[in-house]
Length: 465
Image (tube, rainbow, N blue to C red):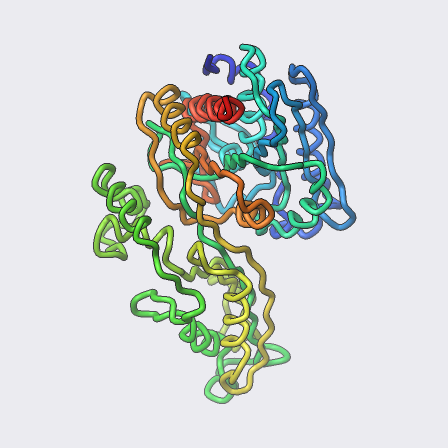
C-alpha cells in the first residue's frame, strides 16, 4: 500500500502547478487581498480538486467570516469504528517572491527540473492539501480503515495566522474530539527519512517608526542639530540585542532549554553533522555563530533572535541626496523560544521601545505575533507508527528535531485540545528555500511523506485493537 511518483504526477502535479501561478500573497504582504481576489482564487481551485476526489463519503466547504481570510474545510467520514477526529493542517497563502529568481526560474511560473518543482508556495505549503487527501484516498482504495478526517487549509499562516482563532471558534463543534493532529508545514534536515518536529519557535513582528522632522531637511543645515532617526533606532535596538554577540538582552524573551532537547541536538549533530550551518549560502570567509554543530542546532530552534527584515523611509542609494530624512521605519522579526508566550514578549518589547525615548523623538509601533510550540510526549502507538512509516516510505529510521520557524496553529490547537497527539513534519529540506528565492519541492520526498502519513492515519484507527 503506497503511492507512487507516477500517481503524484498524474493526480497532483497539474493542479499544484496551476496553484503555483496564483500570486496569493498572505495579507501581511497584500493589504488589499480581498479586492485582488487571489486567495479566493486559490481556495476555489483547491476546493474543486478536493471535490473531485474519490472517497466513500466526503464534503468540501469554504468557511468565510467577514473581514477574515477564508478557510477550506474538507471532511472525510470514518471508515473505522472510532469517534475521534484526525485533523490535517496546511496553508495556501504565500510569501512574496523576495527578489530576482535564478535564470530560468520564476516565482509564478512552475519549472520542473528532474524530480524537483520550483515555484513560490509549492513546498510552503501548497502541497499539503494534495498530500493529505492522497494519503487518505490510498487507504480507502486498499480497504484500510481510518477515522474521521478533517483537512483544514488556512490562508493567513504567513502573516502569523491572525484569522485562525476566529475560524477555530466557528469550527469547534464540527471538529469534534481531535485525537491526532498532522501538520505538513514543517522542515527536514535531509530527504532520506521522515523528520518529526519536536518544537517550533514563536515569532513577534514589530514595525518601529521614529519621526524627527515634519519634512526632510538639507543635511548641511540640520545634521548636528536634529538627531538622526537611524541613530535613535540604533539606541532602541541596543536595548533588545547585544550588537557585538547577537544575544537578546530582554529576560522575558529567554527560556531554559529542556535537557532532552539539548541531548537530541547532540544526537542529530553527531549523525548528520552541522545541519544548521553547512547549507547556509554564506559569503566566503564568514564566521558562523555558535561554538559547535549542536549549539547551532539549538540556536535555530531554542534561542531568541532578532532579524531586521524590512525598512521604510530610506531612499535607494542611487537617488539618495544629502538630506536628513524625517523618519525611518524598521521591521523587526524576533524569533522566540518555543516555551515563551508571544504576548509576554510583545509587552516587554513595547516597554523598551516606547519608554525614555532618546531626544524625545516620536515612536510609533505596529506589533503582533504568535507563540511557539513544544510537542507533547508521543504515545507508544504513535512512536511505533512513525518509526514504521519512515522505514516503509523512506527506507530509513525516523528522526526528531526542533525547527526554527513558527506555526501558530499548533500552539492554538494544543491549547484547545491538551490531550491531542501531534505529528509536525514536512518537505522543507535542504535547498527548499522557503521564503527565499528559488523555492523548491522535492517530489520524491513529497511522495514519501505522503506514504508515511498514510501509515500513521491507519495506525491511529487501529490503535485500540
